Amino acid sequence: MLLVIDIGNTNIVMGLYREKDLVHHWRLQTSRDRTADEYGVLVRSLLQHHEIELADVGGVIMSSVVPPLSGVLEAMCERYFDQRPLQVGPGLKTGMPILYENPREVGADRIVNAVAAFSRFQKGGVIVDFGTATTFDAISPRGEYMGGAIAPGIGISAEALFQRASKLPRVEVARPPRLIGRNTVHSMQAGLFFGYVGLIDEITKRMLTEIDEADPFVISTGGLSTLFTQESSVIQESIADLTLEGLRLIYERNLR
Image (cartoon, rainbow, N blue to C red; front, side, top):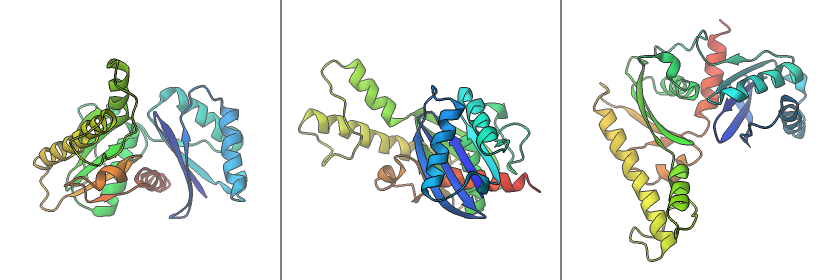
């Protein structure tokens, strides 16, 4: 079985594949203070809950945008699975040309998502990833990573409102009952939610004009992708496990 790990700023997402089938997946809070042993005990407990032994894991691949945790999770894999994980980065085959001026600057998760999306659709398009930041990634019809755009995540914006405006409360990120709010909470939710819908649709539409694709795909992924996909006029589909699937594909490409 293959263990895939995506280390994000807010969550660590793990998946377990049996050949091409994702049989289990978990979302953990990212903690920079946990040790390799603490992560090891946690992962072992998750596997044992599904009656899976550590020895059943025959390979590990990980992507990370949190450098301090990369070594911690690598040590965990070596100690508990007796596996040295593949890490997405320079030197690892992805099968996707990167057109960024400095390819090393691109977040590993963005490349992984792009690999999975092009493998699925076989054409150009845009991926909107709702994470700590909201990222927009453009894929060419030839399967090249063209680049993208990065905006503050909606959680960051909501927290900034609470911290910088003395009389505004901390609110849940949710679709309010109407655009014209009749109380402070609904007014804040309206600005956040519909403001982000506008941001998503406008950036995506402008990005599509720079991609030479007659019938482009537009998909979303990440924690809040379902919420915004329902309201967006351009996102066609939300794919929750896009990053995990990309990790599996890259692992297979590096076994050849």
